[in-house]
Length: 116
Length: 111
Image 1 (cartoon, rainbow over the protein chains, first blue to last red):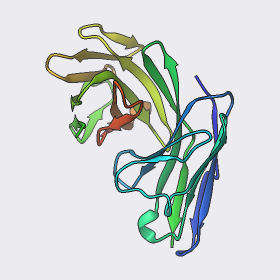
Image 2 (image 1 turned 30 degrees about the horizontal axis):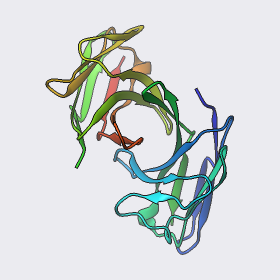
Image 3 (image 1 turned 45 degrees about the horizontal axis):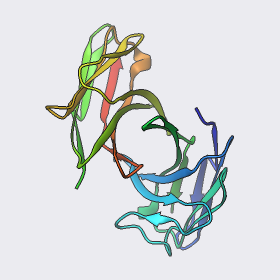
Image 4 (image 1 turned 45 degrees about the vertical axis):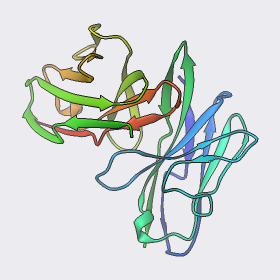
C-alpha cells in the first residue's frame, strides 16, 4: 500500500491565523482526499483533491475556508484559514489505490491542530 | 443520504475476552465495506469485504459481511491490551470513490 508522509504532525495556532498541511505520497495516485476528525467524532470528508483542477468539496465545506492544492499526482496541501477554536481537530489525508473494482484506502499519519 | 451506524459506541472488556463489534449501513450503491483500527491519529487498514458470507481472518481478528441484511461484524478473540483502540467501519459507494465512516467503537481492554 502507499506510504504517505503528512506534516506537521501537530501544531498549536492562534485564532485568526492559517495553517497549511502537506501530504506527500511515495508514488503517483489519482485520488487524494482530506478528512477532518473533531474531538470524539468520526472522520468526515472535507474534499477530494483533483490533480490539475479545483477540489471537489463536500456539503458544509467551502474553498475559502479550506483551500486545497494538488500540483501533481504525489502531493497535496490543505490550508485551514482564519482559524477558530472550532477548527481544533485531527486532519488526515488519504489516497485510494484501485484493486480491481474496489479500492484500498491508506491514511497519512495525521495532523493534530489546536486553535487557541 | 448514505449512513453507517456502529455499535456499541464503547466497550470495556478484560484481557482474554472475545468481543463483537457491529456495523450496519445504508448506501445507494454498495461497493465495499472496510474496517480500520485507530490508535492515535492514522487509521490502519484491517479488512475489506465485498461478498456476503466470506469470512476474512487475520490472527485473532475476523470479519464477515451480510449484504442482504446490510451489516458486518468484527470479532476479536483472546483480546489483549494492545487491542485498545477505536474501530472504524466505512463503506465505499459504487460510483463515489470515497468512504463514509461510522462513528466508531471505542474498545478498552483492561489487564
